Image 1 (tube, one colour):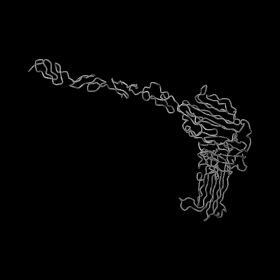
Image 2 (tube, rainbow, N blue to C red):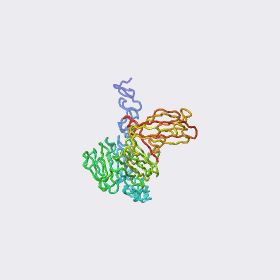
Image 3 (cartoon, rainbow, N blue to C red):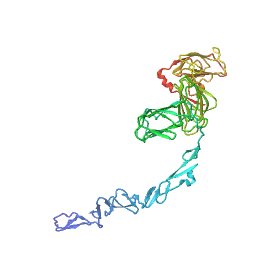
Image 4 (tube, rainbow, N blue to C red):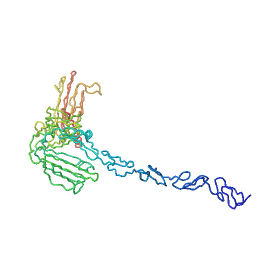
Length: 531
């Protein structure tokens, strides 16, 4: 055997110190792999197989590798793109335009994609939309850079950005005959929200003015009130208020004043509270009349007006609805007049030319008229009369009692009776009914309704109620338990049918003070009045 001083790695020792290499290897000790083609960016580590340097691949390590795709180009070195003509960027994703796209983006070499409203090679030409079907505008089309807008002729208002709706004719001197009111920021005295804008409108009678008095102001301060502010728009005089110092009293110059409250997206405070009263004039009277703004012409959409009627010379105030024409709904959820006293809150809507009456139990009433964004009508006209305690309509029922009996009692009541008994007590009192005798035609079963002869007890005055919403109790047969009504105004309604009659009823009623813990519940009672 031949002897070689070093090992033949990939071959045999065939002569002293001479290796005969296997196919694909060479070198004195057969330690070098042979590749038929050169490994450009790597080494030949086994026959005809290249081991590539980092960033290269391919059989001969001739292909550069990029971690992200070269969108409009080739990967020519590790993580390096060589872009086609007209493109740039690390991944050749950005088109190149020799001239700037003024109102658009360069989306292909020397090609601009224009924003809406523009055209031209460099998106420099404004498209006049008004030349095509008047821009779809019903009245006037106004072109502007890259866009357009519609406007309406005088006497019309814009709806859904293109159509025009004729405004109702409003009496320029219409106003309610009330003396004072208040306006405060949303949520006051808690902090107002960020990014809000609210508008209130105060309308007075012709030649009237208002005295405005800030009770409190706590609005983010800036020397020019550019962040949060209350802006009072009095005719041509628009003044912004902010900060923490209470301004002096203001006497308005015009009969219509707008209050605009604005807050930006950061920092909020308590806001403001101001009161107003009619400047001059005599309100020490016991009768009056007021109506919705513009009556008898149509009121505005999206309106909210608040008034206070206070008559210290009276115990009660009787309201006479001379005319009601407000968008109707069973619960007055669209347009409505809200009437709020110490104990009750009424909502009024619907239509009626018949004079209707509402006796309030207090000499201070808050009125709020609200209209939504659609449908407007003539509104309302209300006259009022202050009534001293003890006079008709304002009788005192403190700790008073009474007795109500069915027709012909104690003999049988007649057939075909329909009779109402209203009972009123002072605010803060409740009516308690004791049934000393009660015998009406019975139900068929204990679970049946009173379908023949019955007595119903209603909360409030039946003529002003939506029956089915505020019924306290219904009785027939021999139901004679005591009933606490938890309200100071009720109506008893008795009805008999065409057949069997009984001895009827004798009811003793008494006005008792409502426990203090029950008063809050009474104050939240709502009467929905749909004429």
